[in-house]
Image (cartoon, rainbow, N blue to C red; front, side, top):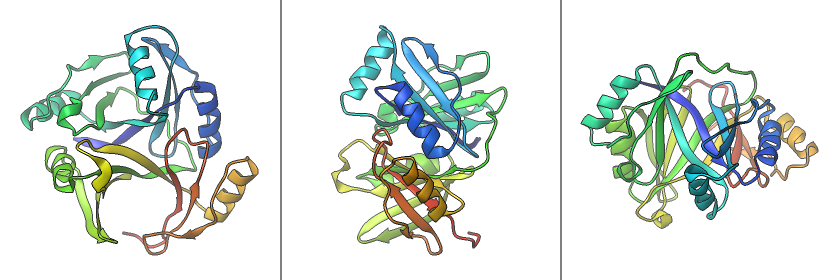
Length: 260
């Protein structure tokens, strides 16, 4: 029932600055900023998964909650899964022990959130859009990293309960990594003994056609980027964006030319 990741949510202290950074990083254009319940937001589409940037704008309960969340710094705060039938997904979540909010109705979409204590600290939403977001050419999300001290528990959530396809399970330098296919992207679970009882959304990896050219473009735009190096997956080439990513560890990856 999950068709893929619809978008990821990044909380920022300054929406204009965050939009400028991610428009540069993803070579895209943000939608016009909107304000709802004291929170200002803007959406940047990519070839597969959008980025929603949010910042407190006015007084209000939601804005105060977001300000409290920003006390720990900017960063990746939520994953939003696209679904084909929101009612069916809601019923499934109830059946598999994910206590949920009621479905919220808007003009363009319907959505609900799973209870965070049932998802081990990671904020997960589900959305059914009446019209799909317009995709763009260029950058797209390759994978999102979730750090967990309990990989078996996390695997049960994303695999057995949410129905994502486990594509790879292996150990690297004594750390277990699991990769779940989610539409045109991947959810990576990375074992981290320091993660604590709650799992933590951590970083994003974006696909680029040519790592050397993309590194040169971002360096010319003033971003601090590493040298291009071989990726963990054979045939890939990667580089790290070291700053101005609004607290999100960010990797740019040139995919292998070989098919999985």
